[in-house]
Image 1: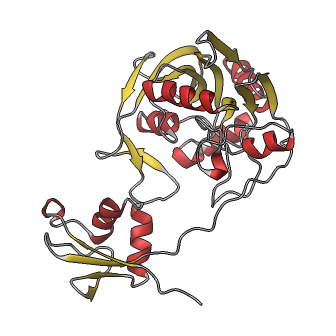
Image 2: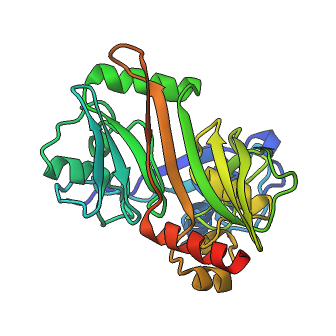
Length: 313
């Protein structure tokens, strides 16, 4: 028998007086603004009993009623080999992999492609059982379109201690990024909060109410119209490097989602953002000895650099 849809009724805080319905709903329920707008457009939002659209304004003390969407179906881990995924290091506590482009860290409702967790399962690796069922052992992630190094916990102790290092920001996560133009200054820090994009559910943006986010960058090599940067993350927000460099008006080459020039992408043969996790260092959870790994550029990124060097010669 089908259950009735869940309806939530919430008083509008005085601090949200005058906000749009979609913005207020997103703040109150933790939705993305896009999802809140979709609910309003479907007639599932009422203000003091009257159906309202996404752009109407709320009144402090009024009641918002929302017919909640059904819960997402559970996500399963599918054990399947991942072409090109290389195991860089393996010991009883953890495994370090070099993730190829086009692979997610773990399954999610919007992703049906290969995953690091699925690849490890297919190769016979047993990972820690801590964390949600679909992301057990995962202590950090890389975007599907970003290649490079990831560490996955195999023991429960390793999971706990690695997570703590990421929280305390003692892990050395280094990326190389090819960005458009030449940042000014050539070495610097971008300190700007990152949160959900107000219009696009799949994007992130620098927003006033985002989480604190800090990116340090240094110039490695300058080309005609582009720069290769060494980037160190102090925080680890979703799409942080891509968002920060785009907001700084120097998007990663090939990153069409965040404003990169498609002409340059075609010229360099790029079908994804030029962004690679080149180095990963942390205190090993078993003995606290500093452990560090590096990853070479994949062929597509190396080819793009070769073309730039030839053009700039």
